[in-house]
Length: 110
Length: 113
Image (cartoon, rainbow over all chains, first blue to last red; front, side):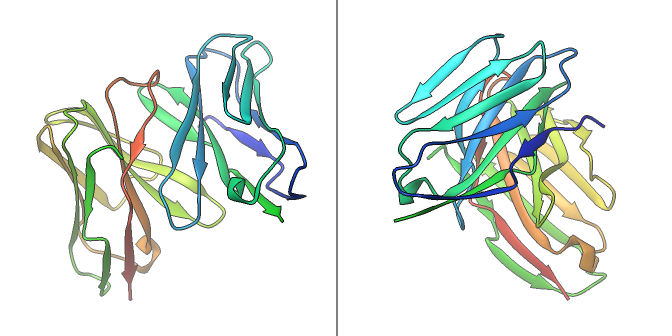
C-alpha cells in the first residue's frame, strides 16, 4: 500500500503569517498529485492537480510546487487569513484511485 | 457545486441491519468513488467505479459492496452493519481518472448502535 505523508499534522498561525506544508509520496510511476481544501462540516474542495515535475500552480494567495523526482509537493499560503482555516489534503493518483494523506489542519487566529 | 447528491444525509441504525447509501450525479462523469472519513485516518477509499457495472475495491472494502447500474447512481451497501462502520461517508465523481480533480458530495453521517 502506497504511503502519502503530510507534515505537519497541525499548524496554528496568526493572521498575516505565511505558512507552508509538505506532502511526501513515492516517486516511482508518478502520474498526478492533488491538493484539496477541507473546511469543517463541509466536503473537500479541489485546489490543484499537478502532473509535471517543477510545476507551480497558484490560486489567489495559495500556491503549490511539485518535485516528482524526490517525491514531494509544497503548499504555500501567503498572508494567512482566518478563512484559510481548514484541513489541507494531498492525494496521489494511482491506477484510477487517489491515495490521500492524513492532512494538515491549519488554524489561523485573528 | 458539482451536481452530486448523497442520500440519506444522516442515518442511525442498529448492528446487523443492512444499510444502503446512494450517490446521485447529474454531471455524466464516468468515475465515481465512495470514501469514509475517520479521525486519524483522513479519507480512505472503499470502492470505486469506472463505468456502468464496472467497479473495483479500495483499501477498506471489507464489509461493503457497491453497485452501479446506470451512470448517475452509485450505491454503497453495508450488508450487516457493525459499529466499526460508524463514520462519515463521502461520494466523489471525476470525468477522468487521476488527472482531473474529484468533486465531492456533502457526506452521509452514519451511526451504528
